[in-house]
Every structure is written in structure tokens, then in C-alpha cells.
Image 1: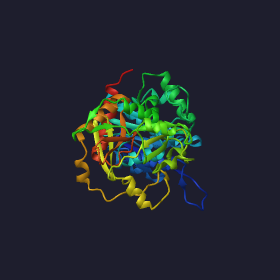
Image 2 (image 1 turned 135 degrees about the vertical axis):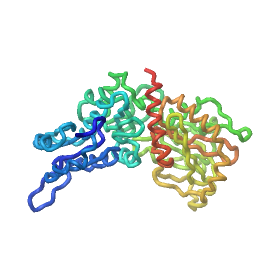
Image 3 (image 1 turned 120 degrees about the vertical axis):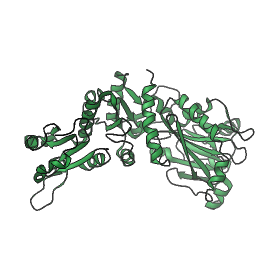
Length: 449
């Protein structure tokens, strides 16, 4: 007799995983079976595969509460051969949808454990999900009282979202196209996929569902002008080094590089070369990664950076960037090599041109090897923890990443980038994964509607 309690094992009928080929070829995986197997291998459950000749081997799993996933045509055979106390999920072979199986399994666990477990339904691209799965962050059954399941947005949302406790979504993974940004208006400039729009409509109609994090709180980080405004509204945070502060880079928005008033705008913002020029759109479009470093004023003429754009000060920072990861109330950071000071960079590239145009996804030359101890001695951790807390309050987000450089001369801590739901790969999984789970749980417990 199977032990009573919650499901601790999943057994798959071979017909679920393999599709039969002709007699001269080996059976092959069904479409989507590779995803299912990866999800199961990282599920936190025991996983087994039954072949037609193996039904008599059920004693191997006799000590575990099991769910058996089988083709509908094989259901009676499995029930007759296996422990009657096990759960069975039968799937029509003709309409086999492997994307729906994770939810079928996790909803059984939720039914068994009720309020003892928090079920998180997530929506993100497969590469991101696979990375988090392999790091142990999205198991069907965790040791933290949480269960994770991918949402199948092609199926009934009512059936799924009536069961899940938290919806975790990475909205930027669902961007289809982006038009020119018009900040501080309600004009729609981000076009999401149809399936994500379906999810958004459902969530708007059911405001009682807890979402990490609502899309309207994330979208300001997709607009560099909006992000700059948010950073400028943060309370003044002083750095231990005398007179230094935490601040955003000096910045101005432009709609043209040959505008007669361009240099007046730069002067009013106290911006002088070198500067870095970025598209106002921060993500979701390939052109958002086209940037330039301008070394001389003449470099602005006919500059090949998509408009509208922002012109920011280029902060000399001795080739060191600090990447911060905010998971709820916990803050982590790592140190990375970065581009050198502007004069050094221009010498390294050996160019007399007044500009460097580059793709931010491709690495520019970095400076000398980072002396982490020396770099960290310039960083005021207390000030950065205060900054992380202020950002959380201002943005209302649960999972945030932000990059900081320390100005070589003023010692100002300059926030050069803020993003939602970073990969936090630089944090050991033994620290990051529990912090991730705790952040989700705390977000639900302290929610406001």
C-alpha cells in the first residue's frame, strides 16, 4: 500500500514521452517531451518511466505516494497493475498536450496540501525558465513549502488561476514590438504577445490574484527617461566618503542630434564630452542596444543611435561595476570588470574618430583585471542597502537588479542601470534560491490591493 500523504513521485507511461515510428526506426520523443523531462528532472520529486514490460516493477516505487501520467487508452491496464491508491492522469493520445501536464501534477499536490503549500504559476521564456529550473529555483515541490508550475496560456486561465496563489511573470519576455516612447502618457507603446494580453486581461478582471510583479510597475524600467525620473525622485543618500552621494547619471532626452538647441540642452544639464548615448527604449527592440560613446562635440552630427535618445555623462569608474540584486528584503552584489575610463578606452581602441558606436550586448574592451578588495573598499555597502530599500519602495517591485559605478574623482555612487527580474547568476544558488522563494512568500503576505 502506498504511504499516505502528498505526492512524492511521478511515473510516466512511455506512450506519453515517445511517439512510435515505423518498424525500421527507433521511437522518438514527442514534441514538447524534452521540456517536460527537464521540468520533471528539476521537480524535487522522484521520477520514473514505465515501459510496457515494466508494469510488474511497481514495487520500486511502492513506498512513495505517486501520480501516474498515462495515455487514456492505457489507463485501465495501469489501474489494474498498480497500487489503487495512486493518482492517475489520463491524456488523450490524439490530442496530447504536454504543456498542460506540469499544472495537472502541481494542482494535485496543491489539492493534497492545501494552505500548507504556496503554488506559484510562472510565465517567462523557456531559456530563462530552464536556467532557473537547473538552479533549483522552480521545482514542482520545494523544501520551502512552495510549488512552481509553468502557466499554459493556450489553455483555460480560469482553471489554472483559480488554483495558483501567486502569478510570477517576466513581462519583458513577452514583448512583440515597441514603438517610439512617449513618457508620462497613457499612450500604448509596448505591444505584448496575444497570449500575454490574454493573461493581463484576466488579471485585471481578477484583482484579488497576487502578481509578482504587476506590468504597470515594470514598464517604467523599459523607458530610460522614466527610469531616470524615478531615480531623481529617490531621497538623498550620502556616501561615507566625504561629500559623495548616491545618484543617477546626469542625463538629457533628445529627439534629434542636429537640433540647434542640442548644445544648450547639454549645457543646462551640465553635460560635457565624453558622454554615452542610448535609445530611450531600454528593452524589447533590437535597436535598444545600439549605443555610442561621444568623445568630441562634432560626434553628435548624424549620430546613428535610434531616436528619441538620452545623452548621459560617461562616468570614469576605474573599470569596475557593481551589480546589485534585490530579492525582497535581501540584497546581494557582485563585482565585474567594466569599460575603462574614457581616455584609456579611446587609446585601447586606437581611434581618432569622435565616437564609438556599439551594441550593448557585445562587450566593449574592459580595463585591467579587477582588484576586488581595492574596488570594494570604495563601495559604501550601507549606502547601497539604503538605496536598494528606497528603490523597492519607489518601484513597488519584488525582484530588482541595479548597476552602480563609483566615480573615479568624486566618489559618487552612480546608478547606471535598473532592471526587473535579473538572473542573479552571480549569487551562489545556496543563497539566491532561498532568498528568491522568501521574497515571493513575503510579497504575498504583505500585499495590498
